[in-house]
Image (cartoon, rainbow, N blue to C red; front, side, top):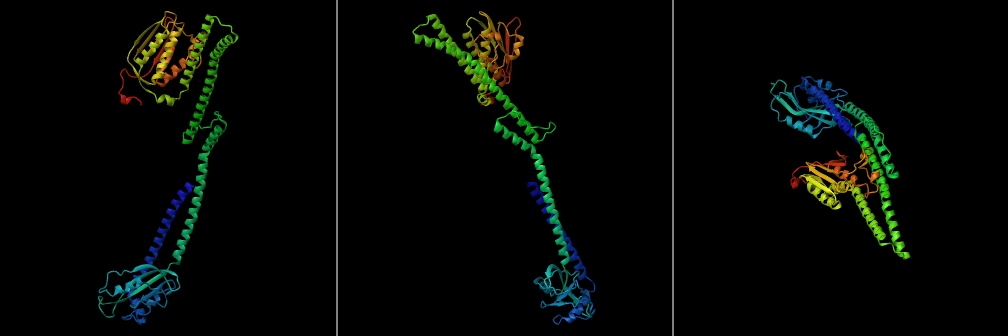
Length: 484
């Protein structure tokens, strides 16, 4: 409809302009013919005979007698407008043209003439004859020389009217209008049909996309894909690719969510089972009146406390992993990595008092969420404390944004290194130790969100070295540059 409307507007503008141009040209041609007739050299002599026959017209020397009558034809109107405004019609005129006030004004103007003008001008107008037929009229002042007088002796007070019918001109304009209307109508209809075809062809991918979206909304099936021409780079193709990417991301997110729930349920099952067993033993002891030996009771309570601590840690890790990127982005600010490492070191020394932890940290400022970054560093140090032998040493160094934590434990087998950052993955040799398998996943996610990277590798001489690289500066940036 928009294409048809635009074409209709353009065609209408062109058609109207064309019609008016043709009308102007046709009228110019008619006016030119009338002007030639009025400028004949013998016009004064031809008018003499008619002046003689007009009783109220002043008389002039008769010359040319009936030439004026011979000038009129069946398609030409020829008449004289007398001083009283009455027309005097040639006997051979095609009819009588109605006199208007404009013609009478021409008669009045002839009374003011005192000399022979170099050119006699008149007025052109559209008029009608006594039968109502349209005519094109030229009315000019009639200047007649008195017989025997000099050329400057003029006789005035009348006007000559010459007219031709406009029927053929109007028929031509009507035919042109009809042709333009037909051509315009065909053009508009054709443009509308072409626009409809183009729109349907162009919007066909949008229809497919709409059907795909409705299918996803109805069935929650994220495996649907829209076929896209790989060579196409228009808006529809980009939109289709974006939709396919979105559904792929949503499918992956759902798969990860389901995997997280399954893994979390599996990890929660072990401490919950142990808690239920220990609580049932304590309850049965109270119900049966058979006290549990103090040492066993103390061990049971310690086990319950340990399982509760493990559950709390696991729930905290799950909450950390479930937080959205938007929630994290709101808390990002400039953080001193040196202060964060030192705070994590204090907590690590409390958890491994029998270990020797050496540290060499230098100033370094990064953009990250403070609590998440500290938790990630604590997780790295906890792993080092957990796998270090009793009385072992842990070496920590921070230099120009590169943090290394090296322990002297058993190390990680080469075939297990690719999986250390997977959620809930735990080495078979470490399953008996406390932990949820989410610590290193949290580390990897936090470091990546800060724009850095983390790796684990074998340390020379045994043990494991964890390396964290985070971009930043050795000096604190101005507060205005820190994110709000």
